Image (tube, rainbow over all chains, first blue to last red; front, top):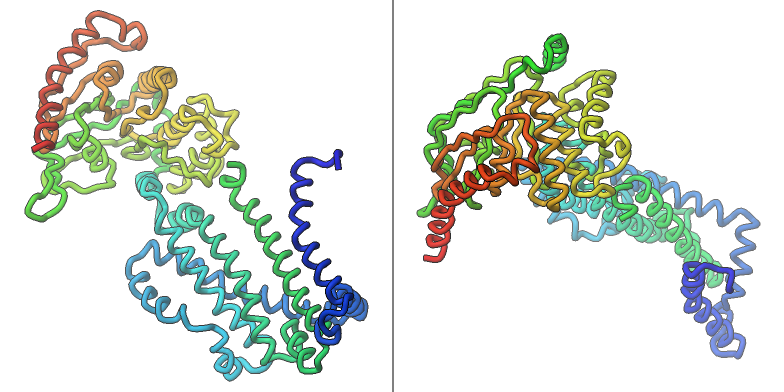
Length: 256
Length: 277
């Protein structure tokens, strides 16, 4: 331990609670508390996880789910960012979109699934559309708030130095809002996994959500847990990736 | 259009060019339309000669910043008019703000280039002019830095470079050195005067410091508060080029400073009395 830096040691300390929890879980089941057919031990899940990795089955479901998340994320966030910036720059745009957002945001997006199946069919498109709609709202709201709160002096500078509306949009408002946009993107990423897994429960024949729901119907509880663990790992990896991108894209915030 | 002008003036030696001339007539600015509208500026008449360095002093709330913002096109007057004659200059004016107003998401270089980018100056010419401007303020080594990595003095230097690079006929400066420490302020004041003496631009410089106004300017406009009016215009007799340190220690300087302080003191007292009633 002495060779490790203070930071690494601190990181290792963070592992104490999750590992401790898994140990207790394992020991209780080995001592005979609970029925291992319904509540698999961590080792049972790990063994099954590895088996699904080797057979390639897990990769297939993960691939499908990731494709839907990324496609939906892209389709939803790009227009959300553009609209959010336009709302901050032009009052008529704001007046038009504000009530729509207020009315549509609180609707549970999963309730739109039947409608989307009707519109886009049973394939990937309906799931991509659901993710896109779900991520749209947190991103447009964050973008708007970020752009609307840009300090007045930057608008003054831009105006005094001859910025056109398009320069204002691409060089000033967009970058000024960027930290808030990323806060929105982080929320949107979590939201996209949440709605997509739920949609895959009922409206899909593949993807991690399908894997979880199908194994529940077949009472393969260990596979169910493999699915849940897989979603958690995907969420963790993608959010770390997002933080890395944020550090690269916002250098003026990074080394404060 | 700016490009053509930039090329045509390239043949004119800098020393022969005089900055923009400004004529302000009966300018008035009122905020709010309710029962108690605030008269920020009232009956402002001021002629600024081409290439002149004019300082505007007054108590806070006397509308000196408002006057500058109107000249910069960031605000509109309620009444009266002003005209700016800036033929032969690429742009009419450029403003230097109190807090530098550098975009935090742009490097120093990109910030300095901003006013050229917005006006479509071609890349090779812009690079040249940015280089010259960075040299002028001694920041060539820091071109890749972001504003938060710079000291307050360096940020204001960048802001000055950003203003100069656009080749404005008139510089509008709103207490640009107010947030700097004393040493940095003296250094930057001296540099500003040096650059001004070389470029012949008109400078309108707003400050609340009488000393700063006398050190830098050819004329000092003393304003009153609420309504903001011109109380007195004082010709500053010190010749250029000036050595600011020696000048600030001289007896004549001290006497003039005292005179203006007497003028301003009444105003500060009156403004305070009005606020308390």
